Image 1 (cartoon, rainbow, N blue to C red):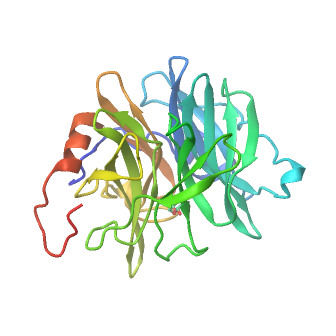
Image 2: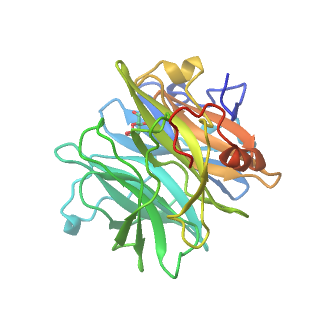
Length: 318
Ligand code: BMA
């Protein structure tokens, strides 16, 4: 395997078989957080009825997880939003003070996806905060600190289909409800695996060099897309400024459970956890079917962003 991150040998750590029989077909792309001494995954479950909703899985050691007996009691979308939610997916959890904010894709079968925000203090009671984007936007990841006095997030507007080029933007908000001051941030890199389509992975992690962003890249092939993970270092005060970027993927779908499933060749993350010993754990959906965890020391991930190129043909030096 060539990926920088090391897969846990017990992967996949969760599959649909860990839920009671008859619940669903696939599980994927969990939000991940440490809460009250437990690792907690907020998992997308594709139910037998066709909708997607969240179930929590818990673990003491970060590797052995057990699902709660029932799905999360997710708040109904308020009628005054005028938006009917048929599924919620790809939750990204950010802790700010004593609250956990969750940006997720709010799906409507007739029109598509918008970014919604929910919050919780205890992972039992969840509250709707706002519907925070127009149509065709997702992959929102909230920074854990304000930037110049404003909440800041990544977002990823897209043209509506799954195949056109698109990339990461940022927007800002005073109240988490209304988002503006949109600006470009990470762009695709010609000549790299991330030359076509990219989006936030995990909410950024504060590092001494600035912010570490683990993002996903989508590479088109004649036979579907390959989803992989990359890293970038962003300026602390002006995070739209890219300081360095990994030259090769942190995680590329090389394992069988990442290459075969509902959507082949996918590793996709929504949260990374920085451990006290300096290891980064990335929980990820594999082939849109099951969940794995991969790890690497933070220092190595950061270092990989600053490494020089080895194969330089036509590559942009960023
Ligand atoms: C993205 C998202 C993810 C999914 C991935 C691969 O566009 O929709 O939820 O895991 O595609 O299918």
